[in-house]
Image (cartoon, rainbow, N blue to C red; front, side, top):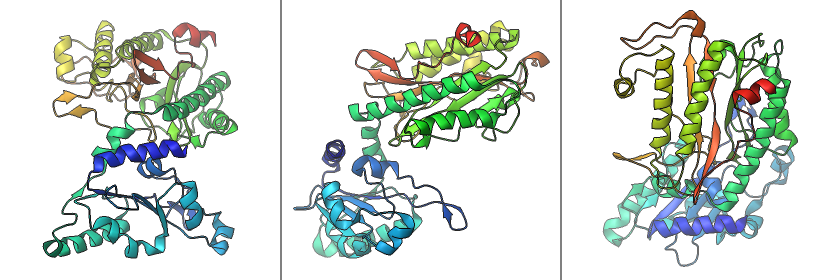
Length: 436
């Protein structure tokens, strides 16, 4: 994998020119009192280094004569390692992570200036670590103070995101491999959960089946808090309590995926736990499935990203009009977003190291165009809350529709000639779901 990280750094440094990029590792987050969550590295930091420890800093200085890639890491400490696990240490980090130079993190204040003073700007993302923000800004201010005398130094501080995230947005073959693995495990977990779910079980029991499958096959764990929402709970988009008992004739919405080497899958399925859709559930489910299939069909190189969403919205609006849940002119309903009480979110998001991955969707008025290597979700839905408030001029919703929530989500990779649905191994047609 070091060749992969090296290639990423080289591509990134080509964009830096005379700039210096400084990246800080993620902090350890506290669960309660002195108990910490499992460490999860900052995605930008991991993307460029593969280094998976806290209290580290990476510096990329393509203009430096000797050290273009520098790491500051925790030194070896036998006593602390007894309590908290082994550290790579300074010497091993230089070999294992191919850095031109590695220092102890304790030497940061002393060593960092040499990598800043010949640059014309500093690339850094403010706001993630306030203490380190203060350190970085102090060094920059010192550079600014000496600029009038030296005539050289960083006179600008620029967000690292736009430069780095355009690279992260297009996945390499190695990244796609990890995402395929995450998708494969997540598909198996959803199929296991579908077979297990039945009236009388609790949502958390189904969650346990999912997450058991994740860990059993080597995933790091859930990519995000698993959603197992039965009945009216499915109308809550980010429902995570998972503590209700599943009832006869409920739909069960499961939104869950695992993480492999920090690369994530994200799948949603909605199905009848009793084995048959009611008439109302079937009618709404058919609309959502048609919206998803037609949105996915749009996914190919050169197509504007928002075309998938626009396609799904139109299918949903027309379907709800056919059922008498919306009325009026299709174009007006879409333009004025009168469908939003039923469908309030976008049809998808980028997927990668982050579940809602980095990357732009729009360039001013122009939408971002899909290209090979993009991975994103396609997840239309219809949610009719028991307390739904319809848009002005729209009909009140009859009680028989209330409390139904449906979402169908797959992960889609753009290929050179079209797309590949990475998660198509989970059933989603009505016939498949009723035959399970």
